[in-house]
Length: 89
Figure (cartoon, rainbow, N blue to C red):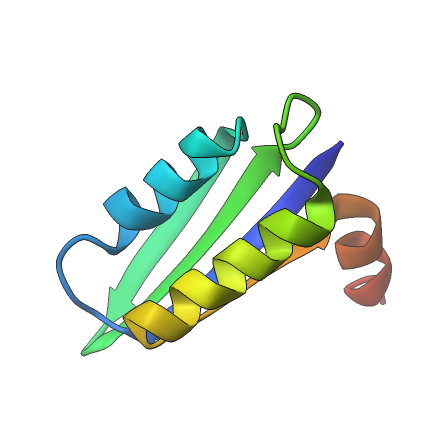
């Protein structure tokens, strides 16, 4: 199953590394990544494959949210089909 991870917050060193490591440890593969910095704000969107994940989707979502709290970022994950349905016009 594919999912979309979004990250928003103030830019600082190591954001991509820390989130990528969390995903790696959970057995999640990053398929595509797009990130940008607008002045002091960091935004990133990742397309990930969770089919080989070693934890449940719910646990992955919790770990990402906890990492976001720790890093003072907003980190969310949504299943691709739900993300597409929400953003369809």
